[in-house]
Image (cartoon, rainbow, N blue to C red; front, side, top):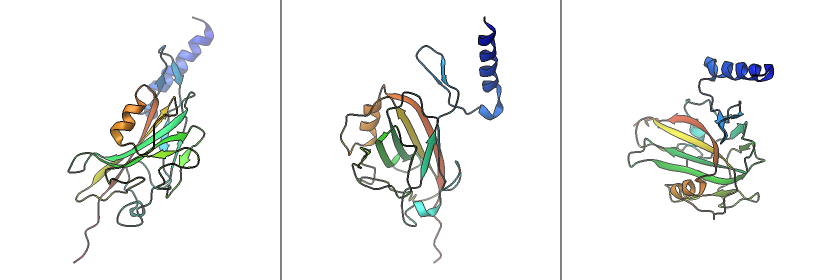
Length: 194
C-alpha cells in the first residue's frame, strides 16, 4: 500500500468514526468506492429539522410553501425531485407536495413556490392527496404529525408529463436515484378557544 493510499484510508476512517458524522449519507459508486465524502443535505431557513413548522406554511395561515436549499449534490446529478408527505395521517400517508425535473443547476426552492404544473425552467409538479397541483400545507385533524420533505438527486431529467401522483413519480425515478436527503418537521393545530 502506498503512503498516499494509507493517508486516504486514515482520512476516510476518521470520517466514519466521528460522532458528528454518524448521520452522514455517504454515497458509494458501483465499484464500492466512496464518491463523495460530503453529505447531500436539505435544509430550510424557516425552521430547523425536527422543529415545529411555522403556521405561516399551514392551513392555519397563508398555506404557502416554505423555502428550501440543498448542498453537496452528487457529481452526475441531472435533475432533482421533491416529495412531501405525512405518514401520520389517519387515512394513510397523505401527499402534500410533488415537484420534479428541478434543474440540476438549482440549489433550492423559493418560499411561496408557484403552483403552476410546469414552470419556465422545466420544473413540473404533480397531484397531491388534495387532488390539486402544487403545495398543500399541513392541516392535521388531531395531534402532532410528522411531515417529511424528501429530495432526490437523479441522474436524468424524467421524460414524463406534469401531473404525476406519488406512485407514478417513484416508478419513473426507479434506477435514477443517486442520493436522497430528508428534512422532517412537525405540526399540530392549536385548539381554538370557545
